[in-house]
Image 1 (cartoon, rainbow, N blue to C red):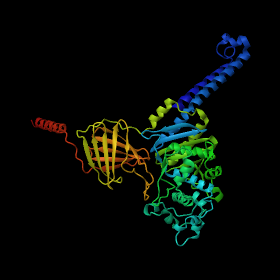
Image 2 (cartoon, one colour):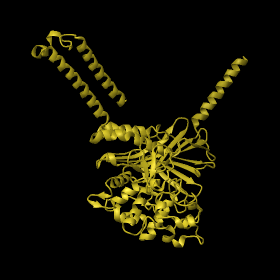
Image 3 (cartoon, rainbow, N blue to C red):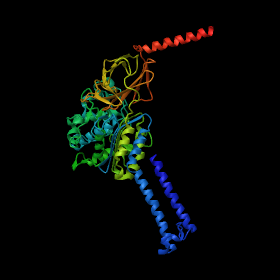
Image 4 (cartoon, rainbow, N blue to C red):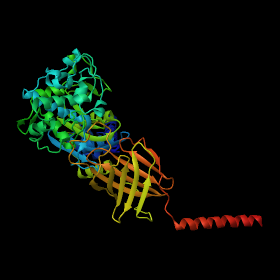
Length: 569
């Protein structure tokens, strides 16, 4: 709509300018202005001079209108356009967005019930931090790029070492060129991930690129062995602490090594700040926290020197550095996570964009951000949201509250047993206490979620269980000490439907439950897979007794009998 208005104003300005020029060329009036001899310029300056003045006036008017409309469009509207484009992606929820340009925060937007302070699972975007930790170890002389993995972890090597294993170096792990067979399932079946990774078959390292998140874990293991500190502790002491960042948590393997390639959570602002650190060449408030040379190496296409082309999913890949992707934008690079986590650094524009989403199209998130970067840059410091725009955006990006009526059951509590389902939910209990509705979800493995639901608003609480997770690794969630927060709301809808929403606001996901008492079914919608709802039959629920239903049925039967009697007569 805003683009349409802008184009409409420009079209009017252009039409007016053309009209004035045509009139001037045809000699309408003394100078073409339409006022004939009443034009004051004709008497003061002469006809020819007046005509020139009118041409200049017309050109000035056109440029002024164009400038006004364009500046309005590329100001806060540039950010609005980016947000709207992200929201239009199929099966995508935008949870957080931070934009920093020229060291100034241009946007810090969160979508309710997600809050600015909430941590978010960063998935593979955390590889950026793993690379920073390796860089610190290299700066300290604890590691070198050509160090062999077998020399750093000799106790994890198999009895018989292949030539391919002996050739793997730190550089190969950083660039995803280890040659090892891709196998992330080993983390689900064993407690010693390093030993089992070393035993995998492989080809000669440095010959081809294979994106393998287990190599990121191996980097974390090497840093811990070489420095005596876990990756997170190392970063806290040298980078995160000096930057004032204290919200990073990271999962650990069964043998207490940070997972390296997944399982880290922090706020979106933290990711944006780390992007800004890289943009500034590793320097923060006058301190060089990590060498500028390492930042240059991790953000450059390291595969070129190896003669390798990275796996290109689409035109938005442009090589791979040290645990970071290059971008199609010249000189830009990024950290990227599986569910729509993105931190894009664009040195040419002095710009950092950090986004957290839940989506099935992570490349779509990247595509939209890259397409909107030119508009963000053209707006400069004008790309600051007005209070009106900010409020409108907050409303548009929030997870919609459920529509309907407050608790309408004649009973204060309802119990539903579910048949077998892939969410492993055994039963649901709803209880109304006057102020709110309480939802209990019992799982087949004995876990039990207890959450408060607000009507027409979200209620926050502490989750009693761990949220759904698409990683099944042994010891998952170990290292995330602060637990999880959950927000809930509900509404009662016609035909006996009760709908409840849960969002794990400091993780990334949630579910919607549609309980249909009339059909004895419940629909489970995972926000990470909104297009694949699961419909489950209720096995232990009978509709509550309604006296008016009995009366209505009796009246209907009497009416049918009366009609039948009349026909017989």
